[in-house]
Picture 1: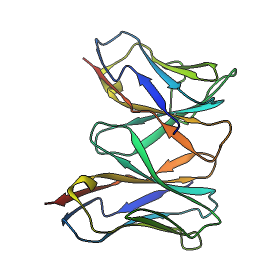
Picture 2 (picture 1 turned 180 degrees about the vertical axis):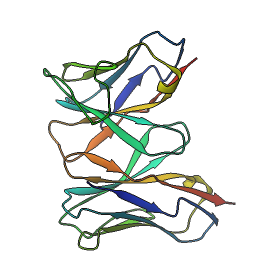
Picture 3 (picture 1 turned 30 degrees about the vertical axis):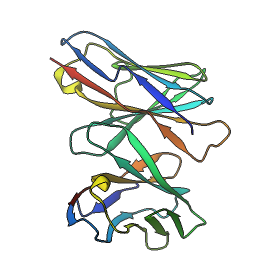
Length: 109
Length: 116
């Protein structure tokens, strides 16, 4: 049974810092991995989708990497801003989406 | 980009009543939609897979008679919470898979259900 774990559960950083969010999964037989952002009381916004054949994807200040063999993915956020404050969820796709529990990020001005 | 809507966004009901939540793909067709629920500070848990024109597939532990799913068209799936109880209070989110791009699920904005 696939299990997805995100560390840390919560993170608070000052504005301008670069940061890394971690996601690990137990079964490497996945199709894709996707990172989402969720603002309080809102739905999900897709940030990056990494296909199983890819190692990383970049969008603006965001860079996501995928290492299937070790069952890990990271989301790198450069030059963080207060507007980046949200919960970040990773999900592995192997037929269904299995979500991690999320990392709650707070960027202080 | 692909848009998925949910209606209502918030609903408060009395215990014992039934509540219907709609999920619509606005600019694409979706043979498959998914229903998730999310408790506060927790992740999304898949409840069921909704397939257009056929019965939904429920995850283990989800009561199909309590959470009725209907996917009558390529753009609409509905989730009905029957005889709702306070423990059904949750955030319900749907997603839809674009027929032309099956790699990606597009998520709705969610529905906050509160059962008094």
